[in-house]
Amino acid sequence: MQLQWLDSISKVKAADWNALFPADYPFSRYEFLQALELGGSVGSSSGRETGWLVRHFVVWQEDKLIAAVPAYIKLHSYGEYLFDWSFAEAYQNYGLEYYPKLLLAIPFTPAEGPRLGLAAGVDKAQVLQWLQQGVGQLNLALPLSHLQCLYASPDDQQAFREAGFIERFDVQFLWSNQNFQHFDDFLAVLTARKRKQMRKERSAVAEQGVVLKTLSGADLDLAFWQQFYGFYCDTYQKRSRHNGYLTADTFWRWGQTMANQIVIFAAFVNDQMVAASLCFQSDTSLYGRYWGCKQDFSFLHFECCYYSGIEYCIKQGLQFFDAGAQGEHKLQRGFAPVLRHGFYRFTEKAEHKAINEAIARYCQQEQRALVLYQQEAQDSLPFANRTDIKL
Image (cartoon, rainbow, N blue to C red; front, top):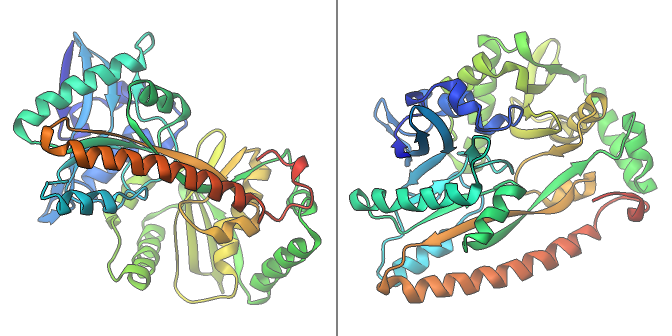
């Protein structure tokens, strides 16, 4: 066996990497991760320091790639969504360094999915043992406070639990398809008040002269990406006063290599695109990722980011719509609260013992609080009879 840390995914072949992960899950695919790197959204290029240093972990058996884990050395906690700023502050209060840390995750993508890629016959527990061995080697050159894995798939979660990692919870909101045949079938399971409200909001969009179109594949040309990137930057400027984490080149590369897994819900007025929502899809799920608009229209955000996605899932027979992180307003549109997971293993140093034990206790308290929140949030769902809905 040969354990290796890669500073670029381009150092392995696309076919070798993709063979270790489910073919339909978009975010662990070679093409998705390479676009982040070559587009300058992670790593260091053209003088742009992102704070995401690529360090993918791979295992070779002779000349065959048998395991891979997307991984990054982080110099901050931006772009993670299951945030650990309080941990970093606690370390600072103890006079300890929290960064750099090792992150096993998909950058800027809080979507549950596989994080441990492995060949047939390779055990996840064995991969985690190799990973721990590799971290020991990495620490010789770059001392790390800890490693963490975010938004792992259920199978991967169990491997991290059995390996003794500290577990954290997060709550997100997920729409589930109850074998609906039409959008009206979904409306029919809502309370009368919510059904009336959604119809009113969708009608209001049309009454403003807005026409919705679903774009994918060949529709996603350079002109589209240039306009969409402007929407993306405007959204971040309004919210955070910066242009966002992703570069125009990353979006363009996704469009070149992953167009068949990208779905756009675009709004047009007089044949001019005024807003758009970007999603990726797998065989079972739609993932809402980015949204932007040129001017404000009443309820257009709900239409592009939720209602059009729900309708698309129904037409395509997709089971789930993960509309992105945060947003309690999703509850009122039929997105149920679900638990997501993060896992942490801290460096075993005597001077870190007290703070690491405190963090472990905090995570246990946080788990209980979020389970309670999830239960309370379910009471806000707009279904007329929740016993008939599989949450």
